[in-house]
Picture 1 (cartoon, one colour):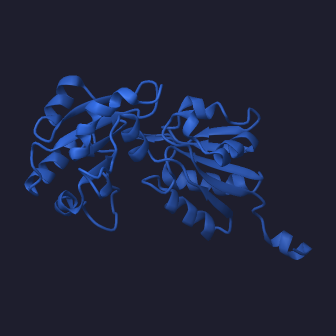
Picture 2 (spheres, one colour):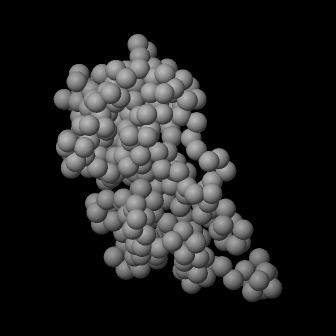
Length: 260
């Protein structure tokens, strides 16, 4: 690169979109851990566990950009602009996201904006909660006797998205296991839609809250009972839902869960 090219490139740093995994620090990738240890700036989401945040270089600037329902530390446009600004002054900027950046993590949106701004960017995948939380609850998403297909779907859709609603009828008949992210708030509607599409009300469902963390808890029921169970117990977000016959494996395999 000649001197003129260096002058034209005002963004000297690189932004890494890093998946922090679901919470258990043992599930973060070695690449992600290495980046956290040498980062100049880390902009992290609300669901990143304290154990993961403890890995961050103590000299790094740490910024909470977390989004929880009704509580935004930064709006999405502000977060993206912050990444652009930090890349002007720092060599290693980490955008740390719970789970995997490209699975309902807005990583694709952020990366596209960074690329359009001319910033060097790289994604570092992480283990998504839809897989890990189910596994830690003793629920295999596939099983030769129960399920040969899995659908991942969000229960919380963005306003103004490309399609007005999830096609729950297609979801109900599209695979044998359904994994729903961010669906607790809309659970009554989701259950109603799946039932109206013909999914048997006796179909097992598991809700897994704070998956892979020490505070992990599960609520097991059926489509017919789960909404009332949530109301009675106060079971809340953040949680994933697993729907299908594989949930029956919970009673057999949950005793073998990893030590949290």
